Image (cartoon, rainbow, N blue to C red; front, side):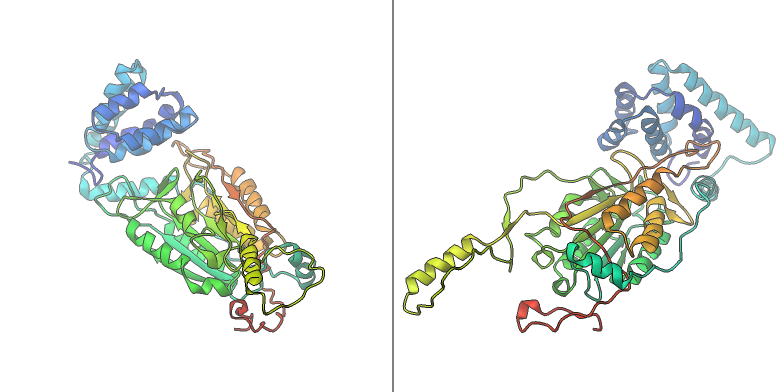
Length: 447
């Protein structure tokens, strides 16, 4: 009888029992991967996601995490591939462990697991692995406020950050996936992340918009509507959080299709989102960056470069001269690179897994929440993410007897910020009266 994801529960249990030995000793080369592809166990994308990893242990871990989801023939094909790549000792280990487990079921008069019991056994497995990775819990301490003295000594060298709200925050959280996308398990603990981020950015004075369980098309529509919002004109920044399964450079929609992260960044660049030009844009996702050639774009409503005027005269009768001067001003209009003023925090390095706890959420969101609540009052965002890196580096999994035991994670971030990005939490400076210009009307802190 097949389990919910296709593989016999007996075979899944055998892989789990032998996972530590397999992660440590298996030689996972292109030949073994090719054999599994030939048998239809791995797709081309899966094979690439395995081989792209830099260490043998991470390659082995990736394969072992995929096999239980690849159908009833995956176990036998895996054993055959081990034999044909001269790893008979590991094949024998698996077969002996499988037989021992079968005898245990017989001796205890228990039936072999069926589809009805598969969910409960899988839930217990995830409990033993994910919930015991660490002993921390989501931080609920309040965000510490920025002092007036700190604001006055730093605001001139930093991005403007005095609107209220500070900006809009979009959180897209995909937890449950279409059953027709069998490789994408439910992200147990993802609900914790979305709640933590919602509370965090609300307390940091952002208007938070949470969207859950979206297909790729729905994600695209959501991102486009958010990036085109006219509200950005009166606010000083924006935040985008994408929580989902992912691969290098993309995240999954609930339909199993991939949303390219470079498209997300492009939606907020200086060409496609002029209302956020020169304003900081923060992203918290797993991804890599694009390499598109940058030819530059005119800055919308930007300041103009001027020279000392000397003696100026007004001559209303010299229309041709005025036309030439207007053309010269247009020529001298400040240009911006297509993409700037962005900072992106990634939960893990390229090719590596990100750890998630079923009750406490992901390591990355936990640490981001902790550091922002404690340090945002006097630390700029780049240093915030350095501190997140340091805290992630110090963590490791605690799940003895599994491949997760002492597992590590390393976050990273990329930045095209051009100033210090302080959030100045809970500080509301007095803003000067709005100038009588249409494009300079902005929301005050009391609005």
